[in-house]
Length: 301
Image (tube, rainbow, N blue to C red; front, side, top):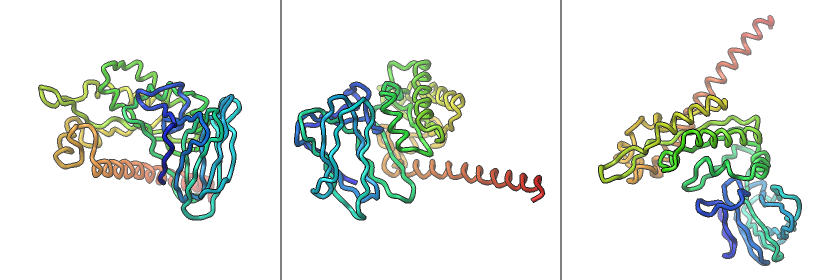
């Protein structure tokens, strides 16, 4: 999957460029207010979806596949999340959105997926904190989550909060509860797991010191997980506990900033998280089978 866009689109949602909270699941939106502006993507999925904002006075856009128009969409209407869905022929295709007037068109993003297999989506914003998502438009967010219909939601926050000079435990707890509740409402059947922050150090004149609010962040996340009936995966503990980041740096698994991992480190993290989840799933299956066998015996089957 690859893409690009013409130069006059305005991006909202990133840290320092927040606006009205009407963003895509990736936390950003693109807006153009002139004709002929384009956004393109190349993909080979079985289903293509374009997510956009429907709004009063919204403009129109043409959607092309390999240079031919496959649809015209008006974004004018009551404020809501809009979706254009298309089923292409097999193979890789280049898709282009082209605005057709000076009325505003606001895009949330593309989705390309196959009819079989597991769909996973990695969504993140550099520097994000949970409070940002709590400020998003609830109806727009809920509609997009419901459209994706996830089975598992992993929410990873806390690193930026643990370093924030404006840290407030009560406010963080409130924001995290709000975010979890919104996802739970939009996807009531989904399992939600909170991912705690990794071990991190701050460079100072006195040398390396732990992030100042790390202990409090992890404590709040454990509390929220219990109260919200979510799983909790303690990233810091799983990587070796407090102080372990130094060993990861020495092993080439973490960058020299003592915060971000290297490619090899993130791969190890992903494999470990997946392995831990699958171990729990196997335990669940074993308990389920044992319960079914007990029921069969009790019923005399």
